[in-house]
Image 1 (cartoon, rainbow, N blue to C red):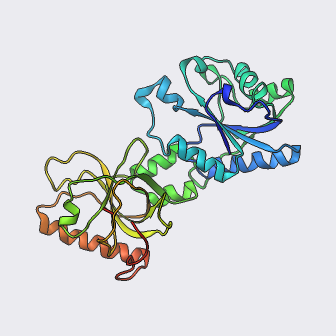
Image 2 (tube, helix red, strand yellow):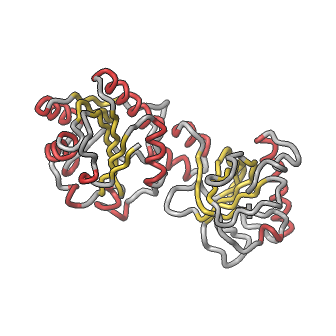
Image 3 (cartoon, helix red, strand yellow):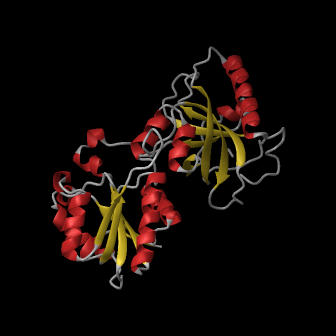
Length: 326
């Protein structure tokens, strides 16, 4: 899959394509259905390439930064997810105030016609584009008639609640990782490099892999049952884990929000400076400030037992499961 970071990067030998345009944050099921329809249209038109056009940073981060949403995925993860959904090429347009002033026709001509040579365009039914969001699907169809491409808007998907990036963020803010996973079509994950912490977990008998939450969305503070997987140089085996998200309120002075994953029954793992992925399955409880270490240890033992039951793993399940925590 080719990734172009500007209009100038688009391959000169790109033939006719079918394009889909959007922020694609998180690449949830609604996005994936749009991509699937774009693939169908490409097959119908005899076109080989499906191109996703996305923006970095998020337009709101440029136009109204005080209202910018926390992103569900980094641009690298977004590209990876779009490829898995069936996209052949991705054009990441650097969003700026200048581009925000483009008329709908200029966007269509400069991006879709002149650079991507579109034979068809598929977007969500609520798609808006151009200066002050003046263009919509009807505008796209009219411009398509003028410039020789088809255009269609796909109805929004979901159950009682339409799947959207906003809905996923709402689920995460409430700790509802199961609802978020349903809309995403995959489990909620946080990926990052394990770094050295204060070693308090090791001292308490629960050594954890510590990951900063970073700039992408993480579930609400609390404790979760989940899995940990080594991304780069491990064997990919998911290891059962009790996962804490928050600032450790029991210990004074800790303010940094982070994800801490304790792999069940493993105290031999070395994950410092390694990239891991934490998968969230179910929330066990909210974050609590305990009166002392004994109360905390009692709660942690209960968290581990409930994690074991939810994940259906027995004592010693993590032993020999693979290399990998801090």
